Image (cartoon, rainbow, N blue to C red; front, side, top):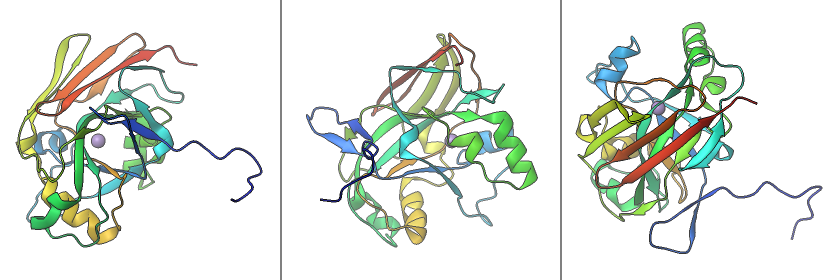
Length: 233
Ligand code: MN
């Protein structure tokens, strides 16, 4: 056993629906601009015939469990929700063919890719990294993992409300790059590992929250997610 100078950081994990074991988290990958209407609202339409998907990462330490109350984060005045279907990887995979993508899937979850939109857009437009806009403490919200081993989710309503008012409403069948295509493409760059999460992108309707707001959302056939925004620190 290695002797550490101080207690090592805890392994991040999520509950698994119907099981006592936790799902340990390795990495968090996020797909950018993966619904046409959202790409358009961000001013960056996608032409799939000439583009490939792109990704950013959020650290596992940014995870927070659905149902939490989190402080409004520092250094932003435009904190946005992004409702997303999350794929939980359960098997290692490198250069996975699209037709084999189901073999690495352990399950699915409902997630929020919370975003400092003001900082993300400054970074985007100045050609800087997105970390300050995206890799936010308690900014990767996720439900329990729903075991759906070997299943590909190709359709299902995805929706989000703030204080009960619908703000996002779409269908997973509108993903520009679907689950098979994402796993095939992402695994060209990374050796996917059990415990990797893939946030698959948000539909249109993203918007700001303020302290006191209650976010609720769901992916049909998977589960719900919720977050309450508290006062800033
Ligand atoms: Mn996102």
